[in-house]
Figure 1 (cartoon, helix red, strand yellow):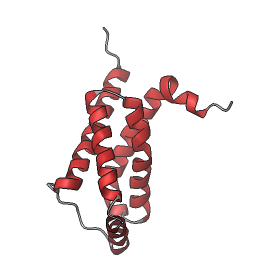
Figure 2 (cartoon, one colour; figure 1 turned 60 degrees about the horizontal axis):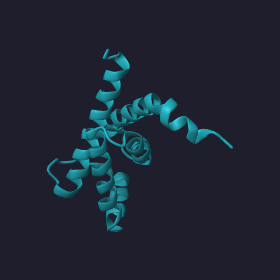
Figure 3 (cartoon, rainbow, N blue to C red; figure 1 turned 90 degrees about the vertical axis):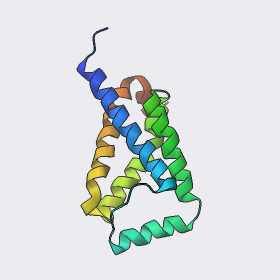
Length: 131
């Protein structure tokens, strides 16, 4: 089988996205990576979400599951679709509350868009057809 550029781009983006969300999901429970300091408004937002007591565990479990799906190359369209709201929220958080820390957000946005565009014709186009 001839491997095309699209093949390598897809699998590279899938693995980067999968590792990112799997590791960050685990970090939400085990705190093995230190997170950089945030400004006052960003920290207030994070604290408010943490005080709900359900949001962070739920989001981190979703990140771990979908990260594993991507790493195992199983249910990839479902993982891309399920991670989309998290990626959008990451970008909005950094745009409005922590612009200095936007680089990782841009990475997950670019890999998410890459996967979405590669999977568009076969998996996502039908979602946007009106009946």
